[in-house]
Length: 350
Image (tube, rainbow, N blue to C red; front, side, top):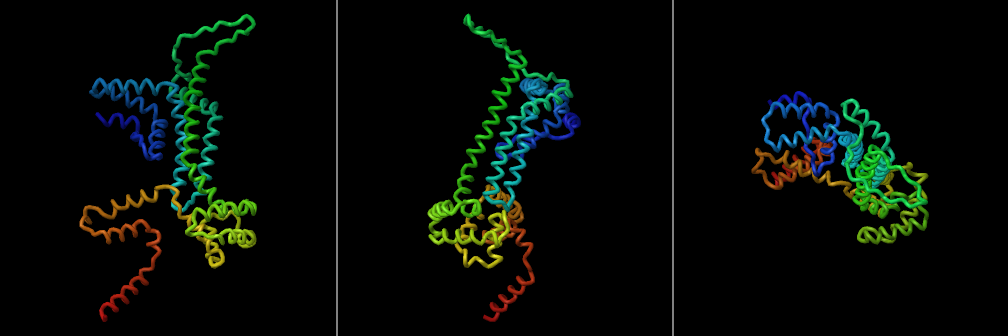
């Protein structure tokens, strides 16, 4: 009995997660792609399954709602919005990006969301095609309210009332679509404002070639004041000196990590020591908490029920090997075995 709805949809629906954005797009994408089959599955459940009155009411409510143009428009809009957010989310969870890349992606996402506000007509046309394919009337639901008649003055021109369909579309666009887009854009700006502020703080190493000498001095002093335990007054002179040799020595548009590696490759760290310290501080600032979440998820793989009596030292060592598996795979075990042999010999004849 339960296999019949699955046969009609050909897929399983995903639960809407409150924490993972990737689960949100997965849940909405399935509904948008298989909406006709989901409606058939709901009708099959009502016809063949023995349900409680509450479950029947909920199923009938879902069927009546998904057969409206409002639901189709919302699915069309949210699939595109959540897909854009998911694409940026995958980039931000990469292990080798820095805060300036995060700030650039968030700014691009805000611009993309702003562009969605001007694409209402194209989104509406796409939803109309889906509604026509499902034999759903392509007009919004209108709430019947008592019209208020306003008395017109003798010299006032009478204005024609908009049609019900136009007023319903305008109400949906102004009260739902624009409100949702404004909320998304403002939330992105508020949530990632700290990232923007940090990038502005490290402007002397991120925007070195685009700043004037006065701006470099001002930002260097501010950065040295924040990290006074690591940077001194020589940091300002190092940055100004580094700017004079940058164009002739390094490639353009290098990231902070690439620039740090290039300085060490040319063995210039003794000349630009504090600049290297500032670059290392910026590169080690975490972009997301995905790294910490992955570290905790590794514990389930390392300490299973077969290793329940494992000590803390062994657990820490195995967790480090599992987390830093890319570095561990590059180790030459021949050298490690030779070191172990030397250690054993010293302990044996001691």
